[in-house]
Amino acid sequence: MSETPFRPREQLYEKQKIFQSIHKHTYLKGPFDKITSVAIPAALAATSLFLIGRGIYNMSHGIGKKE
Image (cartoon, rainbow, N blue to C red; front, side, top):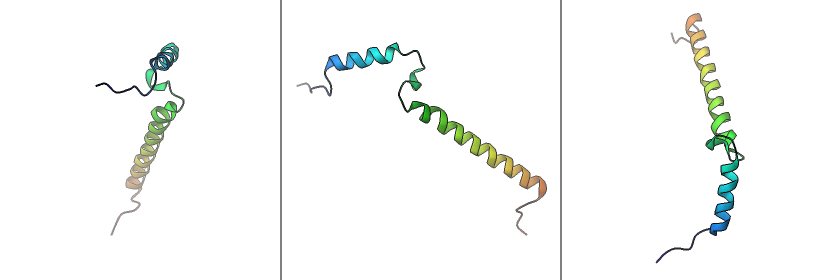
């Protein structure tokens, strides 16, 4: 007993042809893939660098010490 596919094979072949003809990296082919694979990691990196820099500044100037 086999299940019926979600889409007909013809539609799958058309989608495969479209995606295989795009000359981009595999992880950037979808419309919102730039957000998930570029923007979010860049924002996380920028935030962590800011927090590290602020921590180093505070430590070097003695700000925020508990008595």
